[in-house]
Amino acid sequence: MTTTDIQGSESFFAPEFPVFLAANEVVRRTSLSRTTIDRMVKEREFPRPVPIGATRKAWIEEEVTAWQMAIKAKRDEV
Image (cartoon, rainbow, N blue to C red; front, side, top):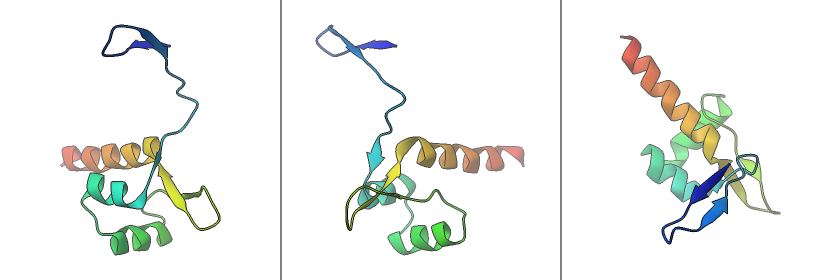
């Protein structure tokens, strides 16, 4: 799959490579606090982060987006 960037040149988009989100970005995108995210992860209500370093964790963007879409779908069922 290819996409065209702002300057009009083609670039290759590789969906098999996940985009990692830092905790502060997950907080921003979901409007949940870090404490709430940690609790929801523990209760298996939110995607688990992946270790990307000795002390660093990140979330996979696709999984966070899927969680958001599932929340929206639940709302729309009512």
